[in-house]
Image 1: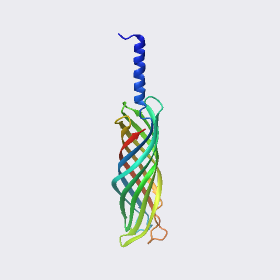
Image 2 (image 1 turned 90 degrees about the vertical axis):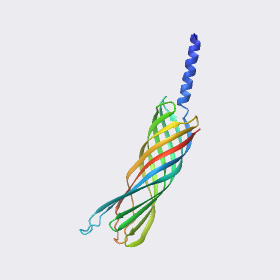
Image 3 (image 1 turned 120 degrees about the horizontal axis):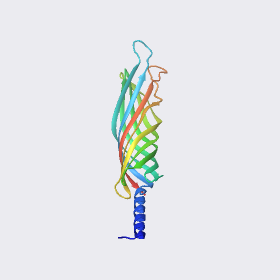
Image 4 (image 1 turned 30 degrees about the horizontal axis):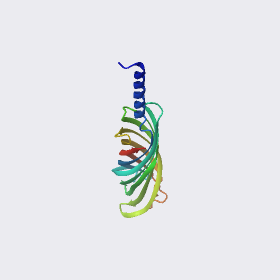
Length: 219
C-alpha cells in the first residue's frame, strides 16, 4: 500500500490536474461565428383621420450572418467564471412593411457591440452562461408608396441592451465550440418622414433575435 507521503503526493497531483483542467479556458480568445438572425419591423401609423384610422403593421425576415469575436474570460472560483467579448457581424436581412399605402423597406447591414458573460462549468469540458451587453444595428431605410417609386432613403444606427444564454464545449485545450441565443426587443428608431403627409413621422420599432454557432481559439 502507498505510504502517507505517496498518498499526499497523489492527492496534490490530482488536485493540480483538476485545477488546470478547470482553468484551461481562462485567458484571451478569438472566434468566428455564423448566425441565423430574425429581423422584425413594426410601424404604428397614425393618420389622424376617420377615413384612414391608425394602423399597426409588422413584418419579419430571417437570414444568415457571419462575423468575428474577441474576448477574455477568467474563473473567480473553481466552477464560476466571468468574461467579456466584442463582436462584429455582417448581415443581409431585408424586410418590407406595408402600412396602408406606405411601404417601408429596411436592410440590416451589420451588427456589432460588446457583451458580458457569467457562467458555471457543468463538467470539465462543458459550461453554460448568461449574457448581457449592448448591440448596435446599422440598417438602411427606404420609404415609398404603393402608387409611386421610392421617395426617401437613408441610414441609421440604433443601440440597445441585449440579453441571452450560451453554452461552450471544449474540443481540445485550445479549441471550443460555442452556441448562443440572444435577443433585443422593441427598439425605437427615428424613421424617415412621409412625403405625402408633410411633417408626419410614425412610430417605428425593430427586434432582433439571433441563434449563433461559433468556433473559438483559446490562447
